[in-house]
Structures are given as C-alpha cells and as structure tokens.
Amino acid sequence: MELRLQTHKKEEFRDITQHIKKEVKIKNGFCIVYCPHTTAGITINEGADPDVRSDILNALDKITPEIHYAHMEGNSPAHIKASLMGSSATILIKDGQLRLGRWQKIFFVEFDGPRNRWIKVEFF
Amino acid sequence: MELRLQTHKKEEFRDITQHIKKEVKIKNGFCIVYCPHTTAGITINEGADPDVRSDILNALDKITPEIHYAHMEGNSPAHIKASLMGSSATILIKDGQLRLGRWQKIFFVEFDGPRNRWIKVEFF
Amino acid sequence: MELRLQTHKKEEFRDITQHIKKEVKIKNGFCIVYCPHTTAGITINEGADPDVRSDILNALDKITPEIHYAHMEGNSPAHIKASLMGSSATILIKDGQLRLGRWQKIFFVEFDGPRNRWIKVEFF
Image 1 (cartoon, rainbow over the protein chains, first blue to last red):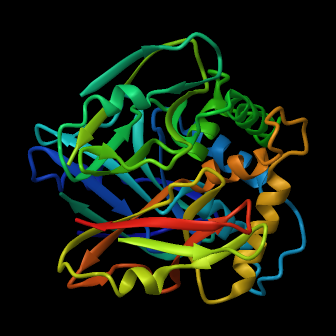
Image 2: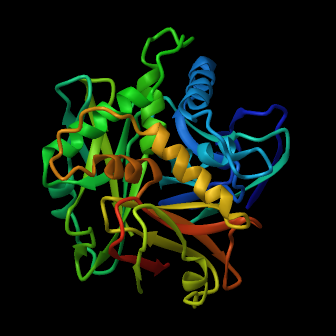
C-alpha cells in the first residue's frame, strides 16, 4: 500500500504506526516500510514522550556539521540525515500483530519539508 | 525465536552471532534480527578485535552532542544512538549458513544498561 | 548474485543501481543488497547530483570525531562510518521493477579503499 502525507515543518517526526497497523492482513511474516525520498527517512524509536523526537531532531542538527556544501540546492544536511536514519524499516509480524517493542513507534522523518510525501508499505 | 540477555554496563556491544547461527534451520533465505528496545540497537561490524567495538562506542559518545535534552528520563543520547545504529539487521542465508563477511559479527548494542533485554530473530 | 568491484579511492560512493536493476527477474517482492565488509556500507540517496555524495562523505568525515582510537589497524573511523550507513538495504519490487524513488540510487560506500570488494544481492 501507499501512505501519503503532507508534512508541515522543515523537520518533523510523523508517527505512521497506526496507518501500518490497520493494514496488517497476514498472520506471520514481516512488513517493509520504505521511504522513496532522499531528504527524509524511516526510524523506529520511542513514541510515548514527544520530547524524545525533538531531542533526536535537535541532536541530528548538531551532528550534521556546518561545512561548505557543494550541492547547489542547499539541502545537503537533509540528505545526510536521511542516510543516517536509513530509507526503510523491517518489522516482524506475529499472530496478525506488528511485533514492535512496548515503547516503539514507526516514524517517517522529514528533513526538508514542508512537502507532499509518500511511503510504501508491503507485507510478506 | 527470542534471545534474552542481561547487559552489565551502561554501554556495551554484545556479540549475538553464535546464538543466531545455531538457530539456522533453513537452507536458503534470510534472517531478520530485531531489537524491540528504544535505547539499544543492532549493528554488524568487526568481531575480531574488541577495540573496534570500544572505538565505536567512544566515537558515538562524541558524536552525540552535549545539548539540553528535554526528555525527562535523561537518556536521550541513548535514543539517538539507537536510531543511528538502527533497530534491525537482515542477513542472507545460503546452504544453511549465515552469509556474513569474514570479519563480520552481529551485535546487540546497549546504550542505557544494565538492563534485561531481548531480541527477536526470525528466518524466512 | 554477487557483484564484484574495485574501489579506487580511500572513500567513494559507487552507484550499483544498474547492476542490480538488470538482475531483477521476479515480478513482485523485494531485494536485499548486502555488504559483507566492515569498513564499507550500503546507502540509498540522491543520484542526480554527484555533489550530494561528496557532501555526505565530507560530512561523515567531520561527524567522526578525532579521538584516540585503540584499534591498531588505524581504520576505526571507517568502521564507525560503516555502522552509521548500515550493512544492507532492502528495496521493494513491483511489476519487475525496483520501486526506488525518482531521485534514489543504491550506493556501495567505500570508507577504507582502494580495495577489491563484493556485494551480495538476492531477490525474494
């Protein structure tokens, strides 16, 4: 399936867990969540406290160095952060349920918004 | 299968390769190693020299910036490191063997221990 | 299949998309691209402007701290960068095509070259 979303800020964590959860129609297997964009990524992390997400965004901002970037579009930091997070996540499924840990949520991470984005989700 | 382990330090690389290797019962396919925790991750790296692991832990500590973190639990650096390493690894299997590279081992990486942890491993 | 390549520089992005694309013989499923080396990784990012790749390499160089590394081989920064990028990528396949995003290419990233390298690619 394809999940479409509109991001609202330059950088943003979007919890997509519920959208994926309701599409699980297999009993056992796994799910691949794939981001087809090069300035956004997928990560799994804590979903309970929103401060964790803003802490991760702030830290990634500090981690990405302030050097001269050659890429004329000016969004090289977003490309770097995308590669640091990764373009996909794989989640196991058992008894028709995503086998996420207790505190885990699946996040689409925008690094160059606001934009119209989409994510591919397939079950095997 | 589920692999349970007790970590002993705040931060620690645990080589879980042997535990996974002995569970391989398929001929060809792949293995998903999944970490259900949000302050720990999975990575594949060199297993021969233990210094590589301590070098990676020390480097990740320097990489994670010393900024004000809002998350009250105080373990935001561990959440950030978890997303940098990733929550899972996928390893190919051929002729009943994990097709790891010569120097590769599969590591569970603790960033907020010591804790009781568990890992999910499935073969497809 | 196995893809062999010779890298020419210490650090280098190698676009391996075409090599993988021509091996797709299934209709629907996914592809696992696996790097069996511990000082190189796999990432998916923009392929249009080569500046993006050099910007990512330059940024990773700044991100990796200049601290004392214990590993005697002297290539600990390469091991760290390998874990930051990850050892594999998973790409969905639909109608016999890799479902990469418009700007995405699959890269083998060398961090300790020049070397003879190989990559494993399997379709499921």
